[in-house]
Length: 133
Image 1 (cartoon, rainbow, N blue to C red):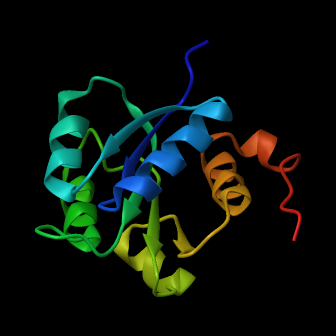
Image 2: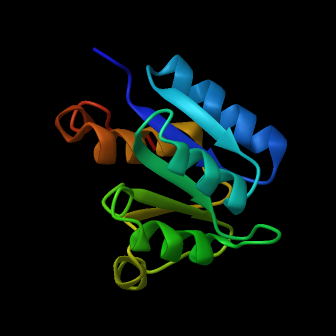
């Protein structure tokens, strides 16, 4: 069975690489992109259909909200779950209104990241992946 692919769109290289490494150790396939335009290009090439998109909010050139708008306008990508990563906390209501499924407030732990990813990609496994705070 193929591993679910998570796209990690983050302009901070160290953080992007850390997230990709942690996800791959946990059984996911990853595709990293340093900014929104590059991510959209990769997503539209359909090399690997995304199970989830982790998206930084504050990026140069095209910010996370602009990427969300383009994803929601694309028939092939509009139903892919999106998790927004930002230093600013977001309310669940405003996220849903924008078409975002969840958010992670930076800095976040890898345990919290894996909990959110598992909950959205493999809902049946999320019950066993309880966060230990």
